[in-house]
Length: 92
Image (cartoon, rainbow, N blue to C red):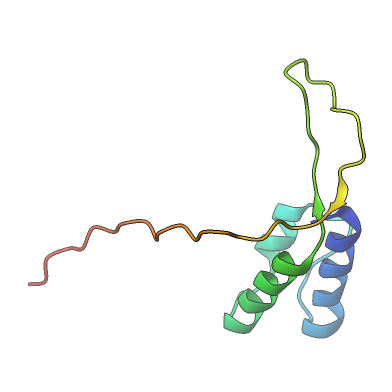
């Protein structure tokens, strides 16, 4: 998500939901500050599915590749990944 998108996202949680997020906090701190419920998880999923991507592409030297990488369109998903296998514990 672009920095502008993250700014709007964190601000909306303060205004709409009363969650202790802040544009001055980092992504991880804002994420941890939210009291997550099913509706908020769904909203986050929709935001990430619709928000423009923010990318930084570096060469092996650490220098950035030339070009403008902000607001890249999200490529369509052509094939879904299988869910990871889970070990089930025996009952009893």
